[in-house]
Image (cartoon, one colour):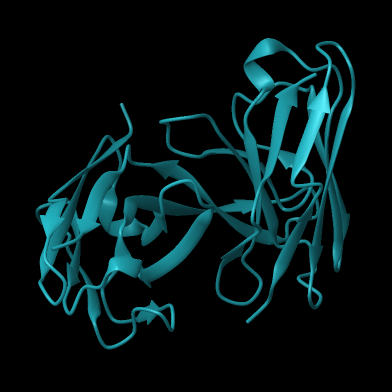
Length: 106
Length: 126
């Protein structure tokens, strides 16, 4: 099983600042990586697929990068609606999620 | 509107069974692979099971293999998860999710879970 490790577990950021979230795979997943956002009491929402392509309707504030084993999700200027938990997911070999990064208001 | 709506969750005793349903609307259900993903209270997302579009292939996480069965009825546009021999570790919100194929700028196919249901809570407790 491919293990996905996200860091940090919690990220405290002020509105308007930049947030950088990391995701590491235990073995190469090529570019078969997605990012999801989940707010309390809601289902996850797809943000990024193919490591760097924004899903339909996702603001350009969100960008993804990386390939192989190291990936990054960047939120360029945090808005109030961006405070949430973010999960990475690999789908190169079956499907596994990272444990999540909570982005909270500083 | 493209939508997935889960139902069937509830309270069940350890060792019991439950059948979850996921009703699809707004898209051609029979064309998509479908998944179940669960989330224990306060925890992260865990993939549970997948079924391909014509039900000829299924996969399960090790934690549920032999106890859970995924199935679908394309005529009814409904996905199912039969859960047997339930334990407290199965307590979670269960989401169904649609897997779509996309193509990146190089024309390389890639996939993602693009539509999720609202989830249904399963509580296993005596």
